[in-house]
Length: 215
Image 1 (tube, rainbow, N blue to C red):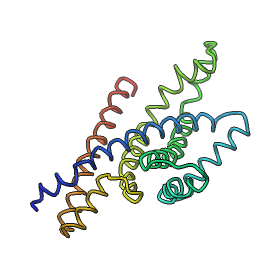
Image 2: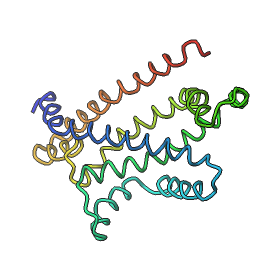
Image 3: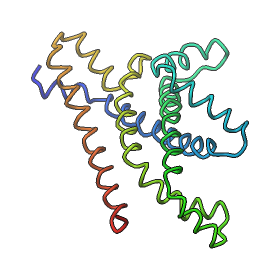
């Protein structure tokens, strides 16, 4: 097989599965991250404790083990999930924990004077968060959120281990049938880079657009 035939064979269905897993996992991670980050700043100790357990468990254990646990262990408790659902849930929960810390630190980085000024204007807590704190915090979070997105995308390669036919799975199957190991995994490296590079540049462009006139 030529190098381009190898790339075409790997892409196949694998590209769609990888992109779908990335997209759904990223949405789940963002929702959990923002919810968790805000809850970590709650005055309610019980809420902070529960979210703290979630964050520490998912940051302190391997994503691969979490993926295996959700896909292989949950069925023993009567909860059977499809491979794509298990993959999205594991990756989303894992990166949601990391994202919650990015959100928490971003909010805490907003200048205290901004918050005091919004209080002086008689804004409610929700108004302060929506109009003053989050717009500024989001700009501070953006570089880290971008890094999390790239790491999440690369982590989707693990889903091949639960038989999900992503790019890595397709490459493994092709390698088993052709034994062209060098060509196949070089092509896989190039494919992942070509997909990740626009994500990186997109985050950088968004960051520049949001910071225009603010510096």
